[in-house]
Length: 112
Image (cartoon, rainbow, N blue to C red; front, side):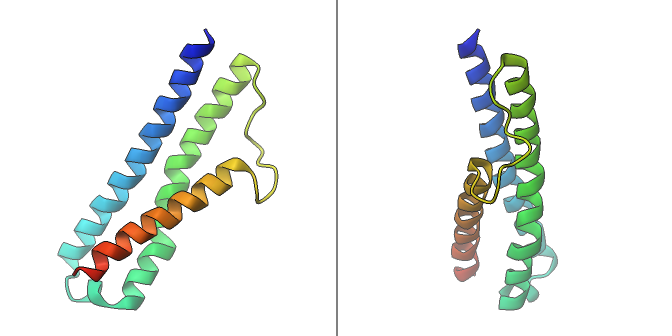
């Protein structure tokens, strides 16, 4: 019983991770094709990583946290919501992932 719940949590979290990466990469590809001259501008890139990336991450990881909370309540684990301060594990994980995603995009942007 417990192993099945843990597997479900891991699958949902990995799905959220890959969905976030794929969504940001698809949006970045579309933006590069739609605005080829503006993509090279630093302000355009900074706007993208300050507006689009956090929005996508909030949606993808928000669904994962809501799913985890439902599983936790069903199995008797402590729920993740509401978040307990700025140093709660979901926020720290989101910040680390945001930094990684931003560095990945920056590397792609520098090679343009």
